[in-house]
Amino acid sequence: MSFEGERLNSTLSLAFTEVDNLAALSETEDGVPLLTQMQESASVGAADITLGYALTENLTIGGTLETYDYDDVFRESFAIAPVEQRALFNLDYKADYWMLYASATWVGSRDLDEFGYEGFNQLGDSTLKSTSADAYWTVDLKLTFDVTENLSLYLGGNNLTDYTQVEEGESPLFWDASGAYDVAYIYGPLRGREYYLGFDWNL
Image (cartoon, rainbow, N blue to C red; front, side, top):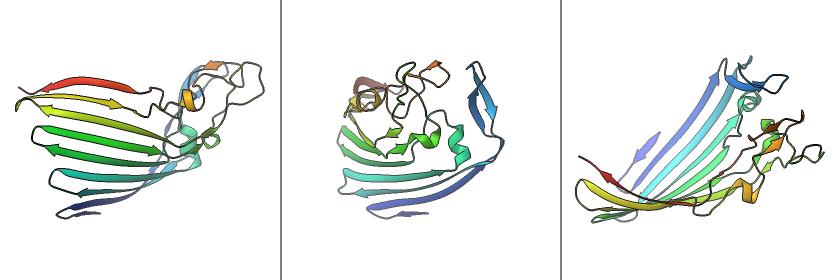
């Protein structure tokens, strides 16, 4: 369902998906990764709303709210815990040859127990790694300048808050209950702040 006005645009979406024979990653008794299929049907419900508002002819702000509800079978299929709640806020400014885009993304907290996370930081240590994934923010920014009709220069940055799960939470490295070493304890960004510079040339 959508609405489009002179200044305000909005879209509301609801979805329900059920999947049979969903692919899943497990392992053999020797710890070798094994691609299998789930025996039961898996389902997920999703809802999102997107709003955009033109404050002026050059400046537009907007936002998107998303939520996902996975059943237990779907949760078992994930090797990496997916997003369950997310909010995106953005600003888009255009003036003459310049364009500025900025966005801030919030990802809600998650209980990693629900996705089967279990591991240890040290071999032989009985202390489990945390299964509480805190909410976090990331901010992206991009500035573009049109030199000609065919050539544009741009610079920007991703994850300007410099959030990574390694610094704020747990390392992706872990020992499992069988004593095997793995690197898949992942639930958040692993790459910190980064900057880029480039150009677009359309022939």
